[in-house]
Image (cartoon, rainbow, N blue to C red):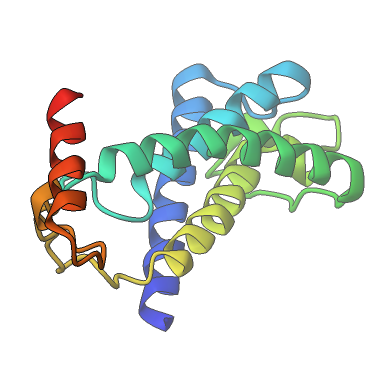
Length: 174
């Protein structure tokens, strides 16, 4: 369980950090608000849902990953809405040498407005929950092909051969 939790933390921090770094360094967005924030955190939740959990190369895992990704959109938007409503924590001042665009801003920012802080937190939380849910049981099991008994092989408990003949003839007519 601890191993799964650590894997979830690593995957979440990686996905959230990569998306936040792409937004900050690629698009030069030091803070997000409004619709852009919902789109960003929805995308973070979707990517985290696809990456975390059962690996995509396992049999049938792409369906599970797709469902986790779609649900991750709702999780990302929902967690951002909760954070923006109930988490009015001031952002941690960042060193001017590492993040010059954020340090130059005169406006004090809140934690949920800075994707460099919020995206890894959100992704780590969601990935940890997914990894804890995915305990790894059943991954090595293979499905057995079970043959369904034919109509002639079903024992209905009647002794009469006429009743079984009627049953077989009804099945042949269909």
